[in-house]
Length: 256
Image (cartoon, rainbow, N blue to C red):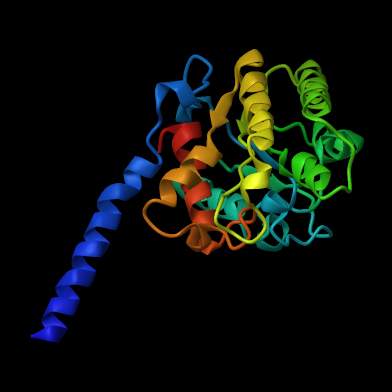
């Protein structure tokens, strides 16, 4: 009987988790910054290039000498790889070419230093950028003297440069996130880190881009399972956290 009760309890917990999971990815109107519509299947053309850019969260251990698109080694082991797998599976007739050019430790100005080679020369049709946590984290640790004003200014210049070179590119700005209750993130991060989140959202509005509210998504997820289930240190996602990010990316970008 005790085994049966244990089984039923576990089943109910699992069912509750499945029922709650869509709520994690539900889009509140005050979180959403979209152009006139999400990217539609019909707007994806044959051989379109999709590029993921950012820091270590995007990098996720990719091999930087692997240069071919859709290469598992080149895509790393994080959300970009999982989203790429979903894209290639969802749109098998589109012959999409997907790249990951995230580099661990990068801040916005470091994206700008390599932007010509690692972005503009690739001529992406869809460009997803997740950047900002290092702009704050390295400052918090005393290893960088940047400010949120510098972050916003540099990011705005990068987006303007991108739109001038690639006027038809579909831009996606991913919200930088930090999850409390993990070893690297504590109360001293806030409220200052929130200013970086707000700056990213502001720029998404200015440039009429899709915006993925990852900070709030992780906050919702942490009500279902402990924060450390989704990210060990509060910044780098676990396997479950990477899957959560990839599913959010597909939902906010394509409505899938």
